[in-house]
Amino acid sequence: MKIGDFEIGSRTFVIAEIGNNHLGRPESAHEMLDAAADSGVDAVKFQLYTPELLVTSDMPVLAHVPKSEATTQRERFAKMRLPDSAYRDLANHAAERGIVFLTTPFDRESVDLLDPFLEAYKIASGEADNFGLIDYIISKNKPILLSTGMCSEAEVDALVQRLPADRSVILHCIGSYPTPEEQASLAVISRMRQRYKLPVGYSDHTVDTLAPIMAVALGASVIEKHFLIDPDSPAGDRALSITPQQMTRMVQDIRRVESMLGDGIRALQPCEEYASRALRKCLYAAGNIQQGDVIAAANTILLRPVVDGARRPHMQDRQLRAIGSINEGEALTESNTERISG
Image (cartoon, rainbow, N blue to C red; front, side, top):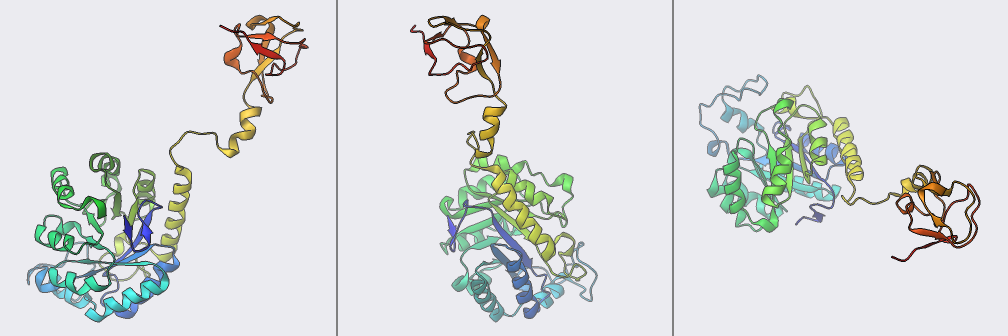
């Protein structure tokens, strides 16, 4: 599947989750987009919601959010919401920077507003059982990334049955802000890959970059990591967000992991060519061998290095005969020995 020009699986698709860390300021959102692009990510992601359709009027501010003048979560969300026009501007800005623009909608109205300029939809963990919204997003016929935080395996099974297999990625996620590293449960990534036969990614809520890097080693094809510029910002996700410097290093480390993983096929690597000769053994004559003599353990010795055309250790026992005289210490090769038929 492709998201824009990016083919999922060609390399790890790295998303900088800006979310609402811009605190409702369009200029901050653009500044963070530029910083994310400079860090080497493949995509940036924001959020779009209608506060009145998301939370009750008296829901307290979330426990992980820094103290602010807002007394309810709806009030806080209202202050952090970007103007509708900002999303088109951000989409254009992302295109100029050569990265994918993503946004998580939390209601149908937001889906409709975003649809003209989104190349894929992200569905948040909190909406994983909101089948009305999920089905509406599916109807838009675009790629879908869906986080599975707070889901049971049975719920993920049901979601996978619902999602279009040819354009969906499921993201392992733990719905805790931040996530204790001992509860990151990264082994789930391998299980998801085997169980669902879909691209699997990881939406990370730990406080640093080790978990996302490990996730790539476990087969995650998408990484989403929260991002901000100022670690002292009152942004709600600051405890689990990384800075541009950290994001740059994470992307570099992910690319290193990719290069280390290879294609999964055990084959002689170019760097092993010298060692394959210098550190392995072949047959040498333990004494002078006459033409016609049978080569056996008694008249051979295994020594380094391996020479061109060498007879290898598995041919030491009565499978060869000398076709010329061989001096003590001389390697046994295809040119001075022959196979004995039978």
